[in-house]
Amino acid sequence: MAAKEKFAEPTYLECGFGELEYKVIKSEICCRCGTCEAFCPRIDHVENKPALVNYDPLCGLCFTYCPRTFLDMGAMESKLFGRTRNADEALGIYHKAVSAQAKPAQDKAQDGGVATALLVQALQSGMIDCAVITDRDGEWKTVARVATSAEEIRSAAGTKYTISNSVNAVSEALEKGYKKIGFVGTPCQIQGLRKVMLLDEPYQFGQDKIALLVGLFCMENFDYDALITGLVKGKFGLEPRDVARFEIKKGMFRVIDKTGKAHEVKIEETDEYTFPGCGPCFDFASELADVSVGSVGSGEGWSTILTRTDAGEKLYAATLAAGAVQEKAVSEKGLALAKRLAAGKVQRFEKKSVEMNVSGIIR
Ligand SMILES: Cc1cc2nc3c(=O)[nH]c(=O)nc-3n(C[C@H](O)[C@H](O)[C@H](O)COP(=O)(O)OP(=O)(O)OC[C@H]3O[C@@H](n4cnc5c(N)ncnc54)[C@H](O)[C@@H]3O)c2cc1C
Ligand code: SF4
Ligand code: SF4
Image (cartoon, rainbow, N blue to C red; front, side, top):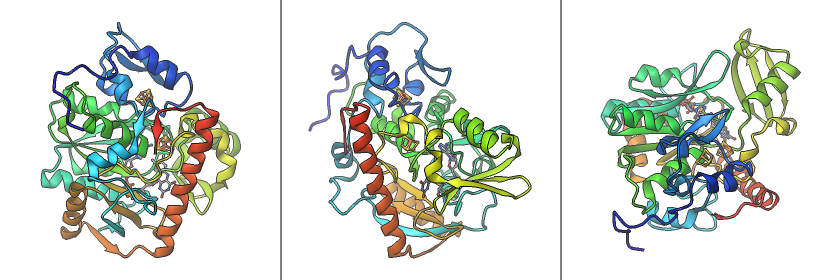
């Protein structure tokens, strides 16, 4: 399809915040990615969700870029990769799959520290001039920030297993005048940003300044209040400030306290803390990222890397060449496990889409 004229009428003109609220927020399929809040000055984050804080011109911007209003993965893949996936590409389209680990190993990293190493390399090589990362406060509440030094990027390493409207911080990067913005985040956050970058719509708000998307693997995420009150305080008797690390390993959700003691439950027992908007989510491996990083498929202290676009491929190669990561082959067994999890997430999406009356999302 030919690109639209720059000043052509938007496709969803007159679909304002009311439509977004009805279709996505009130129906609880909103994943709180923060895309609508980032790019519409009339939408803010109020009481943990997007809210209209000014008059609504019904311009359709929020409806257009929300990853939950509509998403045609075939169309997105065609634009990004020049083709759609084959039936056996359960992890999406990628060039190279490998296990890698940051050198030297990073204590704070969740797995191999490769997400951090890639962003640091991108910053130091000039590919990006800032990175939007998701840090946390002393109570484990997420804080998305614009990092402009390797130290700031490194200090945000580690997984926060709670929903975060991190895309919202891209607007801060734009306001500060950054021109080559890097972003790391979950598949839903990557979907929102990739829609912003790829859709042929006439809105112009600086999306050409987004230069890099590092995606994480993600099976599910948790509601902060439910997780902290129900599990951390309720079941384990811990205060969030006493938690050193959260991790999901071998079917267990584990909370490591500052004395080094592990508190754990089976992952199936954490359903009550899961964020509802994660239900209708099919994307395990950040299929629209430039490069994806996860833990499944590689051993302890290593990350599984999928390079997808030319930009992602070049960045990973440069990080390896700079000696900031070391790599080894990813095992067939590891890749097969990642594919099974990805397929399981698609099945959950199909079931939840019926239960939650989701329409317009086509895998
Ligand atoms: C909610 C969530 C669920 C995940 N589930 C899985 C899974 O099921 N299977 C799997 O293999 N991997 C999963 N991952 C990815 C895994 O936990 C690691 O993030 C990944 O392996 C990269 O490790 P690393 O050591 O290279 O990253 P690090 O070098 O430690 O860097 C991690 C980066 O993640 C970003 N980040 C942390 N928390 C969040 C958040 N809540 N939202 C957005 N960005 C964040 C930080 O900005 C940081 O830059 C999940 C990640 C998240 C955030
Ligand atoms: S899914 Fe993201 S873009 Fe859509 S309403 Fe929720 S926060 Fe906004
Ligand atoms: S499961 Fe999906 S909706 Fe939930 S945080 Fe992960 S990518 Fe986002």
